[in-house]
Length: 152
Length: 152
Length: 74
Length: 74
Image 1 (cartoon, chains in turn green, yellow, purple, blue):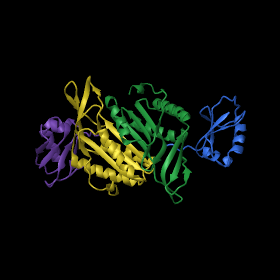
Image 2: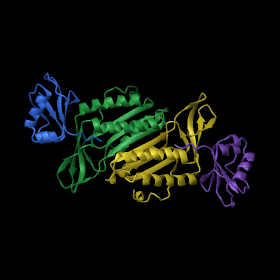
Image 3: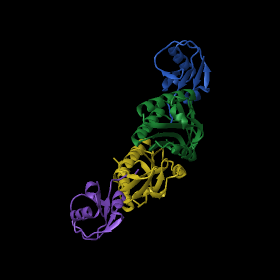
Image 4: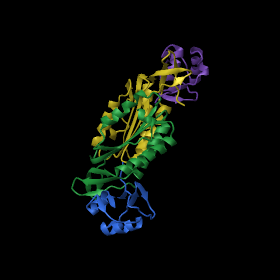
């Protein structure tokens, strides 16, 4: 929690494998000591079993240019803390490796005294991560074969 | 999960005491079988230790006109499912009883294929619950005494 | 008829339900003001059968009546 | 210089890093097109020292160069 005072500190957003619901719960629970927080907003990305040309996505294999992604994330964090000064904490985690359909791959978590700032920050950070972070996703089909996922 | 097909079913949003992070995790985990979900959005309300006229809020004691609140919630749910038809699930829980500063009292959870619908639905439902549900909060001070909380 | 009271209003009245005989919403407001000290200065709403009602209306006596101070959910 | 490849482009090239000697961004693009089959038809970006660069620029040889297919995070 003390790290919140230093939004510019270098962080690694990447975790190997899916994001466990218990990890999310632990992260939420850590904020119980912060009595200035009134609102938490969370976004979670879950792998969909999309059907593409008759084949069904079984999993996404995520890779990333991690150094660049973490640098971009640091910039996005700074933008968000500037724009929403009442935000007290911002946590972002993204999976690497094979994430099966139904598993969680992306976790954005902002806290603030009031809900508007947390809500807007999560929307901004979620959208910017998808746009600016060099993360690559290979959608692997149950029937064999794959396609490369593409945001927008 | 099967209940999602019947958004009009009567539900009780109230839980006695604080909302545990493990309850949130369990709720998230239940959606792993829904492979059409790509996005979850969550709002959590946490009790702040606000300082009011020099006294510090230790806890909020929540009471409600539960029958009316649940009827209003059913109406809000129907509005949300009409407005965001790609939303697959919507869960809302609110605490009754004494919730200490730092504890969670309010949980709004929407899931959809894509993030925009889940995001907008959570914002709408959170705001409408605060406006339309007859829930009352007595802010109890560490130093003794209390004031009645008031939204807006 | 039984009238449900909540929050600050229940506190002021010293009860979470009171008996009043009102044949209309306006009459109920008058009786409540006499019964609950300071109510006239408070912000409150009246719900009839679990819906907030603003305008005067007659009561049959079978309604569920509640007096609601400002909401504070969330 | 070593050039980092990712995702679809690494797959097409059959490697996640290749050696190329380019003295500018434009020269790099030309060398990449010759080296990675179908690259000209693909959408990709080039990052120099972890920033996407659009316009031609000279290289000293000390840059960290990466070739990035469309992003898919989230």
